[in-house]
Length: 323
Image 1: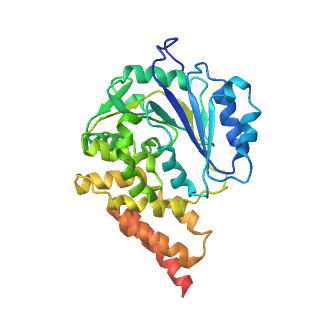
Image 2: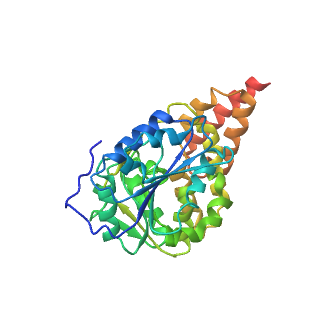
Image 3: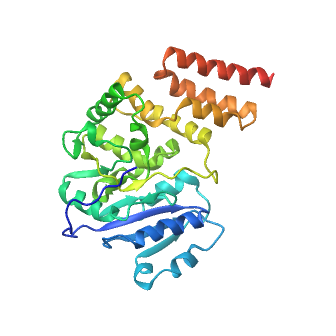
């Protein structure tokens, strides 16, 4: 994937930026992420690492850094393991003001990322949240960005892309963790909702959904790319568990139509074929229960009739093995 280089040099650097990095037992990947942050051409940022009680001392990793860079880093260690969603949500409680960039410990930031973020913040002073691209989004925009002040318009934008290009990858852009920058003066008002619907497994999207639904602020989608996705290496990631977590989306009290709910579910849910593959690695009873919950709460609302039948056939096969 191509990276975005700054079109201009320098920013006013008046905006406070904190990079929030939740982590758990990914020492080598965390070290790689810190390496790339240390190489940033704009060093106007601080880092908070949220350690979900890893099996090693993350302070050892920080202390090996150059003094100037190490001074930027604060480590917050949870008293017990909260899991991916829990640690992700806790990140929003660590900064009270300014802008925050939520960065996963295993994704790959561009060395221009901080400069690009500062430049976008300067241009988007009325936006509360900025979503940077991990796919090529520019071809769907007249300008280098597009802004929304309500949820229906944003969902229509994403559906419009799907209507043109079925495999556009917009879902990845929407639910991805590391491409989002938040203005905490707006987002901290939605901390209650972040924790109430924590098990969506995408707590970073909760303030986007509620804020736009309430028409409380603007969300900007930028075609600039600041980070690349790095696939999980099987350490503590589960397609099924995260898919089950997504079913909480059906409980969100959003003021949108059934059609818009179907768009939202499609945006957030994984490809059902990936879920089938994951189900093959679990015992039949557990896999069946998880597939059933995902189907009746989310998949049935947007899969085609052919896909629904394929899904139900797969569940029938598993149920037959159980008997």
